[in-house]
Length: 106
Image 1 (tube, rainbow, N blue to C red):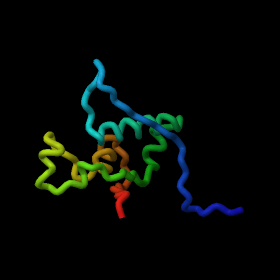
Image 2: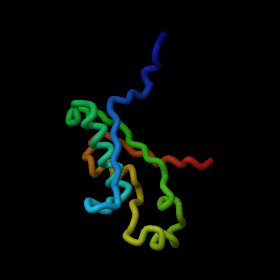
Image 3: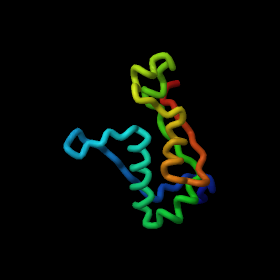
């Protein structure tokens, strides 16, 4: 059996949540995504080494990313990212990653 050399490999997994309790900060979706990515990198056991090897970061389009610009200030009164995956890449300092914003609608 041969494996396609372009087969993605998952080396670590991470999750980030925020609860409405005394430790609530009010993180943006991109900040939560960055925390999940940091957890996934930490899960690999070699986060500094592997961070330079990440070649892409993909995010699923959120509702706030999909509304017309005229409605954006109502849905996201404190602003929104024009490129959520790029915001996460910049927060993590991934030097070689490109970004993809995915839509689940066809």
